[in-house]
Amino acid sequence: MLFGPTSAAEIELYDRGVKVLPERRNCLRCYLSDCDVRPACMHQIGVDRVLAEVARFLENKPRPSIAAARI
Image: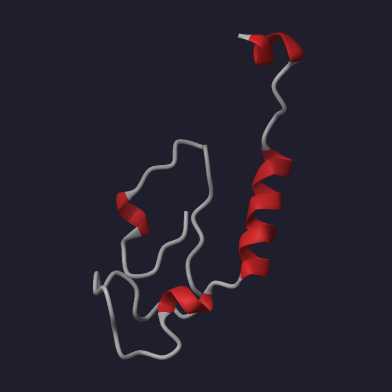
């Protein structure tokens, strides 16, 4: 999940995802729908970083067995 104006601490992923936060963390958890900080926190999270985090998450997850996939 991507976090910026919301709190990553308030969300539990139960080992089913990864939390991605912007590099500059001094403006996190403001809960504003629009702000005057540029670049905005969500614009600091690039596509390449999201893809890298997804790939790392998938590498660390055990693959389900074929029998479990049929259920």
